[in-house]
Image 1 (spheres, rainbow, N blue to C red):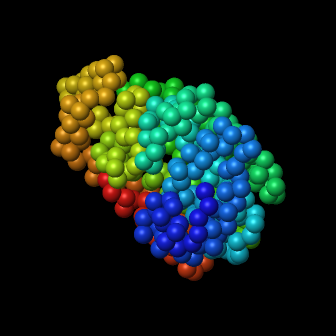
Image 2: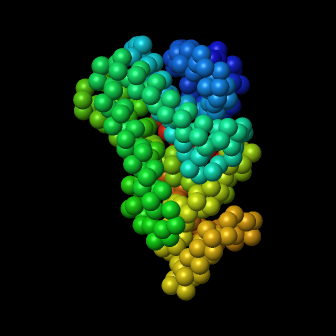
Image 3: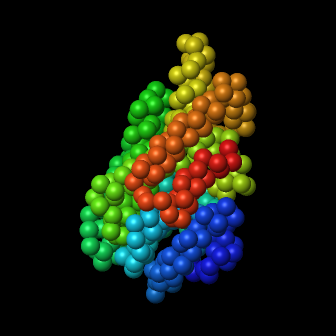
Length: 342
């Protein structure tokens, strides 16, 4: 997981040129994180090391660590504590990916085989546990971080359990949906921003506001991600798509579609979704669903919800962080979240 700066980072992670530009104020910070993770993603046990080497190919946009570093630079200097916190955030995120792919039965993650599809379910469970354990050990080296990170991880797991418990619940409400994504996704973005600010000298009020900024950003990120799961291009997104509906998950586009139909159409949609859950994925179902969503202009509504979350986030950021290059890039990073191709 080691990479150099600039274009080397882009090539190693598949990061877009836009993100490479946005990360320029924190290039050295990302390099330090990469160096640190390179040491953490190693094992003397050959099979574990093989899995970790394969897992290193999952490296993605690293938006959460970027949020942490940029938030820190809004209020002061970046220290080794920031690097360690960013490493734990990335390890927690990586462990959740390993377990999520197993839960969703996803075959591809960032254009490579998922851990469970190549090495089996047991290996995926145990590897995720190993990564969590190492992350928690690192967190104890930073004052005030261990409790925050462990509580965050618990909330992520509760969010995932809520989603699993509601699999097949075609009547899931919009409020319940937002509670799930708040816990399973947005909370880690929020904590990343809090950790960055608090370890750079921000006041408690500033750190709390930055956490809310990150949370709003995370909500928008998940809304867009859920839309991509329905209509995204697997080659562009780089992972298995259509897994939400295949696993009976109701996401915002489908909830908005269901709630906007008259009673007859609604029953027809619920029947379509129910039959799909029982029969599995098929192209005819996907085309029919996309047609319904297009005719109802649902994706425009969902995109607007994500945009409103980002506008709330940017307002918080501008009210909280002093005007500086890092704040400008953090604002642009927030906008990038809703500009990803749908």
